[in-house]
Amino acid sequence: MQEKEFDRKNIFGKGAENTAYAKFFTGNSYLKPLTSPDRKPFFANVTFEPGCRNNWHIHRAEKGGGQILLCVAGSGWYQEWGKPARSLHAGDVVEIPADVKHWHGAKSDSWFSHISVEIPGEGTANEWLEPVTDEAYAALTRE
Image (cartoon, rainbow, N blue to C red; front, side, top):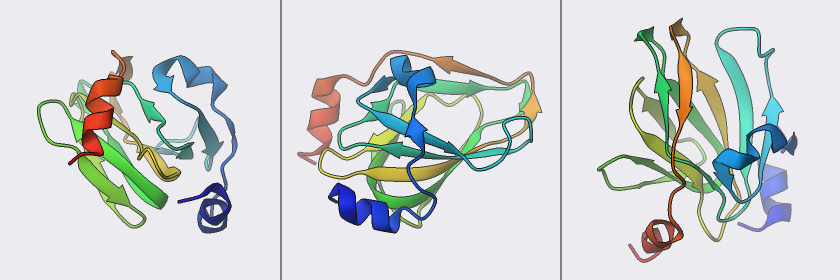
């Protein structure tokens, strides 16, 4: 999906460049908070340029926690460690339990946007890990 068409379909808007977390992404991402970060759960629209993805990461929690992705526009990927990647499109929902290693991002030929919902819990923290390799990412387009 091209940027102009994507911008028309991305009803929450791109937001500002996600510079605070840029070191955990391959490519450029954008962040538009939809609720106050102090409010739980916190909702934010995360937008990925084509080919952009976040590093492998884990939402740690002693109790509760995890993340929900509500796909808004474009086309992307979600993958849990040791499992095949899942193709994502507007309207898809991904429920990610606490303590599951995963990554998500745009397909190489499309912008992608999802609402990220941080599930409240006790002792929660995000653990950022290694980047998704270019080789592993490129292999998805051949599937």
